[in-house]
Length: 96
Image (cartoon, rainbow, N blue to C red; front, side, top):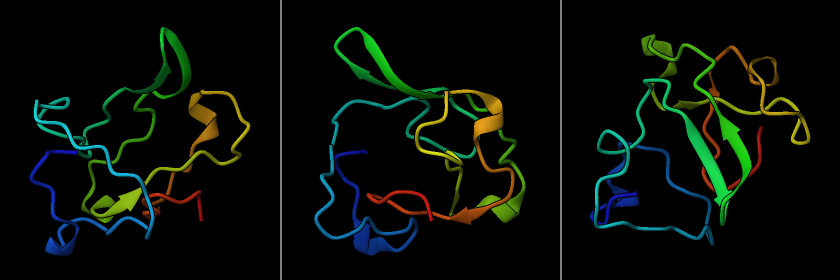
């Protein structure tokens, strides 16, 4: 997240208490993540631990402030492993 992020602003769902927030002074993606289907990879060194390939079209207004979640935490990183309807965001927590 951007170094100036303020969880109290209310534009985005606030992260769960105790969630580690990583702030960066540089740009992240296209100035942050948006409902544009960005590719996201969680890396450990040179190894991809998990990824999301932008498989769900989240451009409709019904997705504003909502989240895409892996249906089963142990599922492979494939298009059929993600919800297709807007779900409440769970910043810092597992899927609903």
